[in-house]
Length: 368
Ligand code: IPM
Ligand code: MG
Image (cartoon, rainbow, N blue to C red; front, top):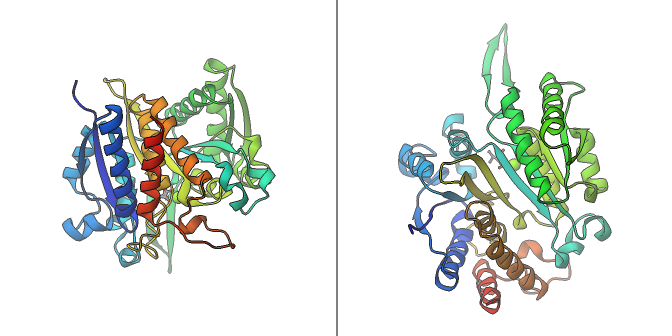
């Protein structure tokens, strides 16, 4: 059998450091669980711009289209702030999402028991929290035309366009309902149907998909601003939240913070199912490139390692091995391992990025 292929794109800032730990984990599964991958590596973001003058070289894009899954670290850095829009590191990431047609961005917000005290919200509000945000990620205001900064009379006007077709809403709604069936069977759809036509259509189509094909799933609708408020008030009321690209960007950062640290949260961005039965897929931590701590061994590799766990689950049908990896992380945190982002005011000696990776490897070793 040919080995499944993985393209690793470490990117910028802390991306390469956290990816070093993921490579160790990938190697462990190869040596100990017979899960071998054909791993290749390339550039994305600022480092690709430095090397090639573009945040994503066409050859890299072509490779990403061919592999079974892409694993991405993070992109961006202050030295790229003044670049033209089309050359910014973020464009590399957006091009991958768009050209691979990765329309369903799955962003779980799960609170590890040992970190419940660490949230800025009360422990009872977040302990045991397990929600999944499904963010549409190939359309909406991120990509809608017209866009740009134009002259209008004697001043300029900045324009972006929120645009959703029925089929774009339909397919992401289906992803959310399918996921909900494997979880707690509830979907809350968020938009601004009170002020936006795209929101009116969003609500109508989500309801239609529900009524025709997923009547067994509990569906509710909420305006996105009220949703943000409810996420902070009582997040455990939610199971799956489905929303558009921009609201999803904001709501997923909010949800992430409920869990205590952005350094903990993985994501999967899935596209159409390929003839081999696997979805087009890219896995990446929700956190950014954190240039302020890059290169200092301070980054938390857990979000990126958990992103690999999502790859095991969603691309490679290895749910039990994904559980094993998540359990190893739970164990290590339960034992008190903390990177600086997870340190409370009581202090202590934090783990370096590499020590956290090694601790997880150790816990994996004890799991077999
Ligand atoms: C995210 C990020 C990206 C986005 C940026 C880096 C383009 O914030 O993945 O949430 O806005 O989608
Ligand atoms: Mg974001």
